[in-house]
Image 1: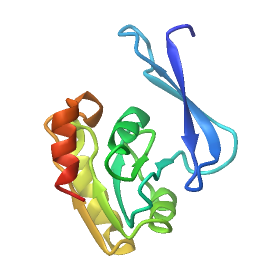
Image 2 (image 1 turned 90 degrees about the vertical axis):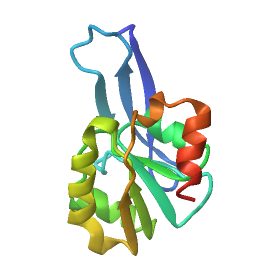
Image 3 (image 1 turned 180 degrees about the horizontal axis):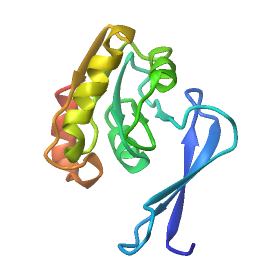
Length: 146
């Protein structure tokens, strides 16, 4: 599809494990199509800071923007089952759930469900999706959790 951008999905060690084809066309039937090269969780890791803390977001554009300030993981969706949570816990001790602004209640449910896997787990309530924030506001938000 000519209206899609291919975004790689990265393993915790930085190896490409698949692709998300994301549409920016307002009339697209599906915003994102995921294709995995291996049978691994559809999580994409961005670890420029090598920190024990991570921000968990829904999509790759949000994770890439957050990674300028903190380590991040994109769920490539809004779900986080036990296999996803265990992979995150293998690499991070402290998590901040920061799903899109319309998914705060879902963030709280995931935090409660997986809290025992982490030393600390909390929810960041967003006014707008992280990918849509101004650079100045995004910096303010993420400075609070570092």
